[in-house]
Length: 170
Image (tube, rainbow, N blue to C red; front, top):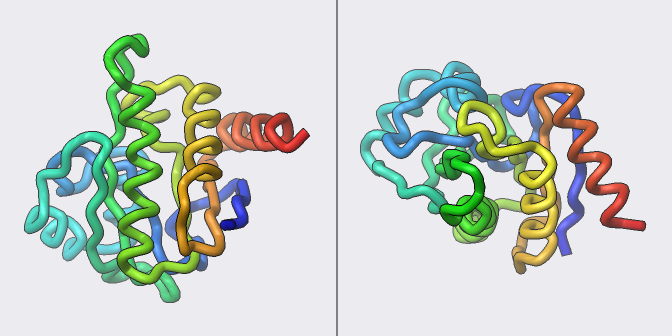
């Protein structure tokens, strides 16, 4: 069973085998965490994403990590749901993002992986339900990954992820 950690920081600085990015369907780069990862990985990341995209919401695809520092070898691109009130399958799509990312990681032999809070930024998914889905899905998905790190980009996201982790373990 994988260890799940919550940390506050810059996902592009994580010392893991793979980093997950909350991508748009084109995989060409965007704003938020996706933009930060694309800037850190360099322009070849967009070219590689464009060569394999588009990617449907809830799915995941991998590219090399290019200019990200080792040990990062892979970027796993997943497309989260755009929040539209919750009645349009958003929860299932979000859970699929985490599940499919782990499946892709397993196919690549990844032992450690860092996830952002998928869909909670520009796509507007409320942080608390998103954290619940992330923790539940990652805990329930069989994987060969040893370490799953949830990386919060700000104190508010960190607190939500940590609060949920604390309440889930009690």
